Picture 1 (cartoon, rainbow, N blue to C red):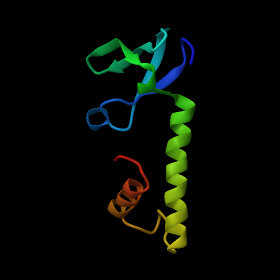
Picture 2: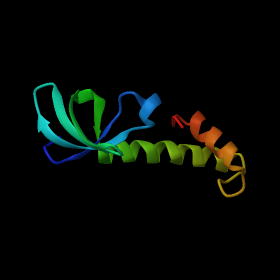
Picture 3: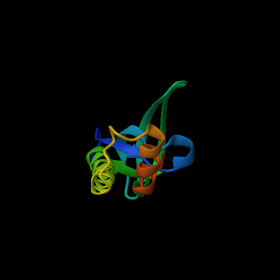
Length: 99
């Protein structure tokens, strides 16, 4: 992780969802200073390093979970295009995505 990298802030997922996009603007031994854009303006704060995940790793994890759900649906003879949206959301939740 380096200053200027895109990350996802993962703490407090019940409030923020699966992660909040942020930019690293400072690095310390065990923490990072990140900046996030909010409706009320830009917020900058310090977070533990383990509460942020590089954007590429975050995206890869989400895609892996989605692909696993796709394989499960395919094995059942279903596809996201042939099932109701609520059923798809339920399957994604079972696949590990907090929706």
